[in-house]
Length: 426
Image 1 (cartoon, rainbow, N blue to C red):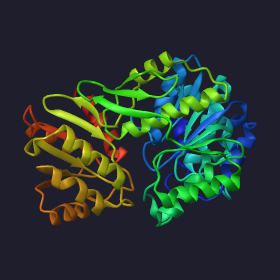
Image 2: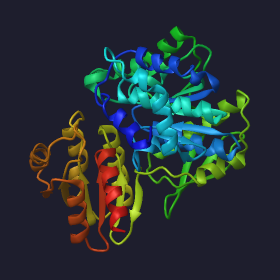
Image 3: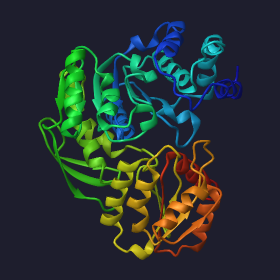
Image 4: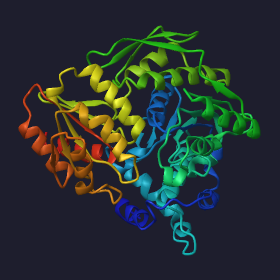
């Protein structure tokens, strides 16, 4: 089996259907010999920030000399970028051989796995075969019934909880918290970021039921010093950590993610992992995590920011007001998936821009341009409609002056298509 054949087999599996339960991924892992038991994992859940936290931990741990597997989703640069070993995407040959090993079980006619379940099993198997020291694994959706919830963690992390995927996870923040807190495991610390009182109460109950130690992040304090240039600089007040940290992730929300990562490093040390302060500083200084307030072009400036839910839109709005004072220079290229709080996201973002380029990605879940345009029109913000991300981006670049800023946001699928277009036009 070659890579094209492996992709074809994967693409025959349900991609957007969410199936409750862990039976199918367990069946795949049983077939592979339970590879997830070969190494410890750091399991990262949360509404926002979990990918950034996973990327930071991966970079730091590799700088500390550990062999690390990283599993994140969705892809941004390439379909393969979600499975990474020692900083390198799993090769096409690795994908092909991994799918071939599971092909018979994937073809089970009565209850086939979802595509995400198969990719999760492939990643966990690839990490075992590569002999990683540990894996950093991002939850795909929720936590309790997510395919990743069969890993054997030495540390679990819950970054935050807000309303998202309500049709699947529930329409209250407490119900969503219950789903996400389902990653708690007996004897394993669960580190949490900033949670509301009601959410924290849910997580506390779930940790007590599971026998997990709940750790509320309050030991590490991080203060922003500068966000100019290619990196943000922070002062760190905590034992055993570098006093200054340079982080090439410019979004203001990364401060909270960084704080969680630094506390996680302390907890990992307590569990026997060697991570020096210099490895922390070097790993964070060299991190690359596309699509998170990523400046990809100047004159005009183009910024890619996933901002795929209301909480993400609110964080982006704060960054826009803080970093881009001239409203007349701000332009927004916006596309979104249909299952989001689109009205809330637009009400948060659109009035902060002089013009909105309305579009949709090629995802089957994308909200049609016509529907999105009606919502923007109701806000009274000037807009133009485009039938693809590529046409919207081409028009935005053609009409922009060198001092203008174009922010691409609303969905990582939109960001991914914008990035590919920009790479193609040079």
